[in-house]
Image (cartoon, rainbow, N blue to C red):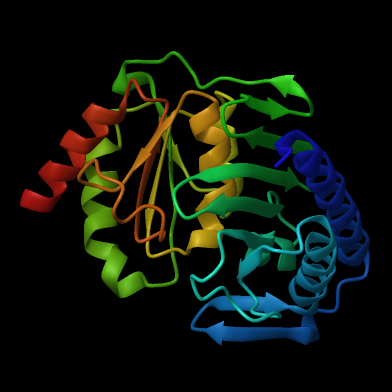
Length: 267
């Protein structure tokens, strides 16, 4: 399988989808927004973009299955060797409110590994990409995670998922421990974009729980190829791929963040 040829086509697709999203934002009809669950929204733009992406990906790699956010196609049942993981518009709430960032996210994986990831951040025209073993790139320029090892100087990103009741106590403990003991704490509302910012050295740490595979797959591939690290809250791989627990860092800060998480669990 020629990953370079495939990723080139996927990058083109992500940009084209991003241009469609940008055009739709100019005359966006907020009356056509639906609620999937409490405070979790989907727009007609999400659904149309997913249909566009799926149609093209079928042509690029006909044998691959799909895991997609909006379920516009039958989801992979584990019987295929390859499958795409797609979030057509990561950061829908930002998009609805005309806030940055929001992105198009496409990943390809097999039963063991992430093979490629492409994330196109629409508002800044930033195309992040990576293929397994071939490095990570922003607009075709090689990127690496930050060299920071001092948690006191770290810019930390925390996500706020829709499962507020389950997340609230641990999140408040973590932010309480870190606030005043790091450079700053931010939240941008687009998990895939935040993972890419981490890969590019713009931030140093990101953590969130109760999200989904399509929220992390492409960004995780890019982060790993940029030299970063991603685990669950105990340092393992069991829960991050599902999005249940995601701790992502530049690698140098990982053990320090795991220690903070252990402290939050004890307290």
